[in-house]
Length: 435
Image 1 (cartoon, rainbow, N blue to C red):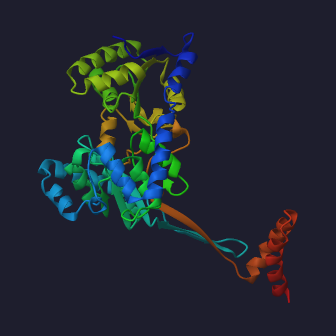
Image 2 (image 1 turned 120 degrees about the vertical axis):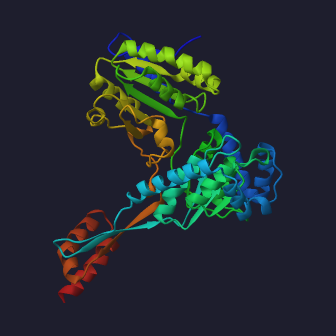
Image 3 (image 1 turned 45 degrees about the vertical axis):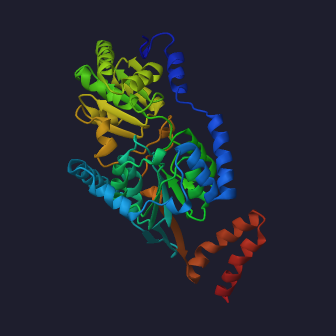
């Protein structure tokens, strides 16, 4: 039985091995891209009829357009059937997520500069957004909360959710979460066809302005292809975590933290970076113990052996440098002085500081969003926030005196660019002000 990759920073061959680890996140699924393109074209051409056909084919569910939308009665029944403990957990998560995202809301800007020009920026919500939620028995109500609540907080009036229901199965917790999150309509459709419906609209599914939420390779390919007609949040790859841990940790805690990502699917990635090689050995042994007892051991084990890694480093400064090159989706800093180490981190989607702050806390109830950049895109991208559901509009107000102060420079630049009407639109007003 092969284990995860073992690397030691500074040893011969490390750079080549680390480059191979980085390349492990590179993904290209040409089959998904081709299939998504065909599905999108069909939905654009045939609308609801294409949705019906693809739902029968992929979800084994016979639908008519009248049954696309989940009824209020179905949502209320699912909510009522939610066990009190789970209902309470959803309430706690929803409240904490909403509070954190309310704290992000920006203020409008208005200022007057030395030339007398009034300048400003106004924030406003999108008109509508679409939330994609994976469906079936293995559904994730936390994903509903994380995607829909920031939109609600931002003030988006229409929040449409699409969720596939293979064999007619809809997870009641997903519907209960949608009610708490402020979702205004739910459609029991999924896949690339649901993305196409949200982007371009059908007779039954009105189009939206932005699509957010995770999905499989076909959903990701569809989101990539409809971008431009609508906005999207990101193209998400498999989940990933990097755990930086010193030898003072309980190896079982760290082993389970690694498996918490590996159990998502076989393509997930979990990496341990430690300045104590012996501790790395203890974690590796404990991972095997946990895998043997885990109901998802087959999935987590496949992920750990194909994509996992344990990297020994000289010190935590060297660990920080490697983290910045990995730019992970999730980063745990299980060290004695996590804030000090965090100050050296430039690239990570979300960071969890201290031995008692596992990443799984952030998946559910911490408050910050768990929709995060994967595959090293944290180098240039950020996690979902209220800003994904807001637009900013700048404005300018100038009277004759303000125009006289800055207008001549605009005329000069317009003439230099060979745009005479631009120059004349300003110079006419300047001349009128002088007369």
